[in-house]
Length: 231
Image (tube, rainbow, N blue to C red):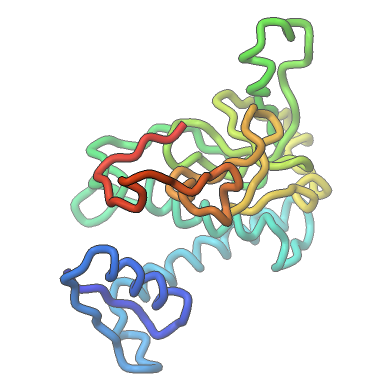
């Protein structure tokens, strides 16, 4: 296995850690300042930035100027990469998602940053709340990575919802709601769930991102395993 990346510190650290985990790999360092030497990786980065520009222009046309440091920009970068992975067809007529999973992604897509109604998970689960309001407003942020659920931004945190509804024309843009959502892709509260804090599945084993994670003890602690089960 050959691992190649540019000289940026963050990505180099990820590459080195991945190499230490796998073992028996070759590290390939391109010349400093020679971006074309990064090949497909450099082109992929440029493509994602171009997609983000389109999303940003569309969002600002609807809700006004967005601060480049706003939380919504982090979610925009995440969704730009995911949308490319799930819907951009290659020369073979398939998407990266299809080549990886063997199936076409048919999850519903809503314009990024649009205000929608989502079905509140805690009400849907609890039969004792049958008379409570079942729908709430939020900002559509994209798909969950490991399920068919949608991610919705609110002022209290990020919610996973399995059912959404689009608003009527004239009610689909809310600049204040877009600017006031809480939670980043690496640290987001789920107030509409029994979990105090939840991050994407592959981050659950990182103590800094998952405060409920306990240090393993016992004679098999630290042993590499081929399968992990996580609720």
